[in-house]
Amino acid sequence: MLKEFREFALKGNVVDLAIGVIIGAAFGKIVDSMVADVIMPLIGALTGGLDFTNKFVLLKSLLGGAEAPATYAKAKEMGATLGYGQFLTVTLNFLIIAFVLFLVVKAMNRLKKQEAAAPAPAPEPTKSEVLLEEIRDLLKK
Image (cartoon, rainbow, N blue to C red; front, top):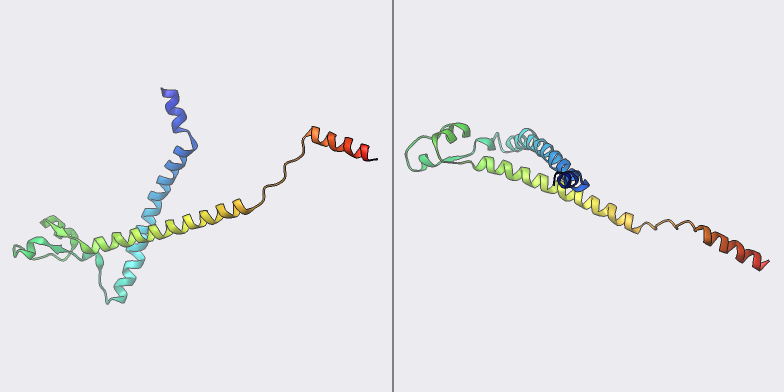
């Protein structure tokens, strides 16, 4: 059973999947940083300093129970909070990742079509075919 598991774990597909998951996690961190550190500040600058990370609704403040604090982190400590700014940021992360994956799949499909369209090289003749050709040529003479 251990031998079967080792064969399964070392198959190309499993290793490729593991590499894909690790690269995907690293790519997710890159996208998170790009959205949080580049795109959202630009959107904030275009909208007059709007900061999406601190856009929330404290449900207690809707019921008249408490004043909403200035930051989303403090609001989460106070109780149930709708963090729609955080949701917008995560949604933007998803859209960027989905678009990049779309481009990767599109490029892979284009490469596969090019490989399929390229003619396969003609196989070299076998020894018997070469001998038969020589016999044919001698008979023609």
